[in-house]
Length: 154
Image 1 (cartoon, rainbow, N blue to C red):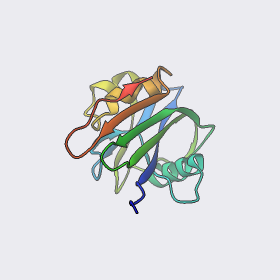
Image 2 (image 1 turned 90 degrees about the vertical axis):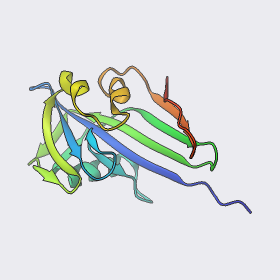
Image 3 (image 1 turned 45 degrees about the vertical axis):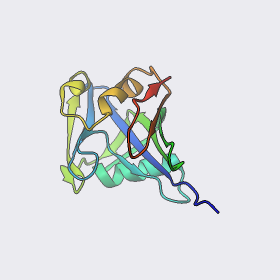
């Protein structure tokens, strides 16, 4: 009998402040290092939206609501059958006191038009149209221990 493939599900949320035209970013120092939107793993038995709300609260101190799905990034390992999914959201509805930093990294607001010039986490620059422009609904890529394809956007 063959082992079942691993399926890892994660989330990421762009929090946008329409009064300042800024988005909240995290300078990640643990995994996926660089500037990124906050997010994390979906726990077993947890809904995707509930996990996003929980992760944002844990990583930023903010309470978010009215999440809009931007799209999904789906990586498939063609050697093992493993899958890695990132459910990408955005919201303009948030409240609470923003933390300065967490163990994941420092948090700060940045003008959304300056994002692409920052030292972004690997692959985030290609995902910005998903969050900012409603240009795509899915990015799909294949990886294995020998190579990784570029994401195909649709």
